[in-house]
Image (cartoon, rainbow, N blue to C red; front, top):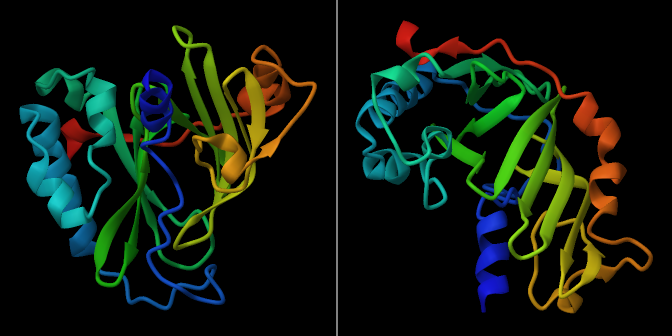
Length: 227
């Protein structure tokens, strides 16, 4: 049971939020409304200062939590306005900018990715205490989760297509075995939806993703204090 809860925590920030069915996810024919992102930024600034986030989640249809809370380690206050930043950029080439929230001090670390769809901003993924995202450039992200108390690790590389995250590779260990899938989810029991990968153990995972981890890219975050 503890293992189930652990893996649920590692991938609460699951990145398969497909908010619309389309044959061409790289083409977003929305008419972008900057006011929607402006609302989100204003709300997130309030979250950072006050710690209150329920209204933000309801409006953005977020997944249970807000990535900036991970950054604040359950704290809140004015000091975090200098530590947490934001940037708008079109990372997948559909002429719709994404809104990326991340660390000013460690500018490859991404706390939240939001996109504009169906007239509003949607939270696509978030970092949390057991799972972090780093930017790899373009539309690619590295996902890394670990809990040494339970001997669990998860690594993956995903691409943002405009409406969803598509996983180039994703590996995790469960019950002492290593598994892989293309969903970006830790699945318990693993054998239902994932493929067993023999010959790879817990300590091998960081080495398999060493190239990506060494090539994370900084993002030009603007501190929320300047908002």
